[in-house]
Amino acid sequence: MNGPHLQLEVYPDAGTACRTAAQRLAQALAQGGTAALAGGNTPRPAYRMVAGMDLPRPTITLVPTDERCVPPDHPERNDRMLAETLGDRGYRLVRLPAELGPERGAREAEALVAPLLPFRVVLLGLGEDGHTASLFPDHPALEATGLVAPVRQAPKPPPERITLTLQALSQTETALLLVTGASKREALRRLLAGDDLPPRRLTVSTLTILADREAADMVEP
Ligand code: 6PG
Image 1 (cartoon, rainbow, N blue to C red):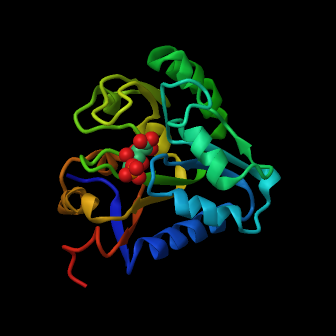
Image 2 (cartoon, helix red, strand yellow; image 1 turned 135 degrees about the vertical axis):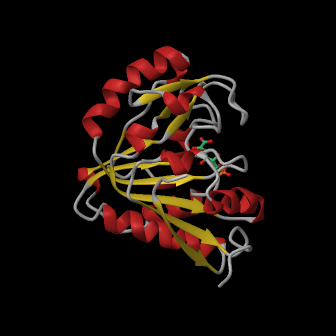
């Protein structure tokens, strides 16, 4: 299928891929602006590196690409992870009200996300099944027309989530996909082979994939 141009950059290890992600975030945010940031485990080291960088924090807004429907401050919240890794250092962190449940949470988040567009940079992750943000393969949220969509029965726990849509995530100057570890190898192989996985449906012109050697093992040097 068509979709963004996939620009693959392969780094020797996860630490180097994360350092590159941190540098790209810092470059994109050097003059301020908004970043939409993936949850999950992969980007944590990158966020910790950004926390140590010199940035115009009062002019920077951060928002998670998706949020889990658990109470505020629950350890599984992406906004909590962002606050913990990036440090409470003067950025504005927009919290998506997923505690209200998928439908109401997505409805109320819509008004919070609209004024943030377009993003300066979006950093996405990739699930073993090829999902990105909380946009899972074959899930109705892929067809959502607004900026934030409700998600029920997500294959990755917790099953209830809200997610920025393809339309929202595609409104960005820079789109990055950070993929590390052998467990992501098959999903990355499928994405590069042209399978209809959610990141392929972004309407950005280029999606830059920052991968480590383990994840990109199948790619010829
Ligand atoms: C989430 C994410 C999700 C994540 C991928 C990869 O909240 O679950 O935003 O899309 O980026 O599932 O997660 P890992 O980095 O933990 O493998």
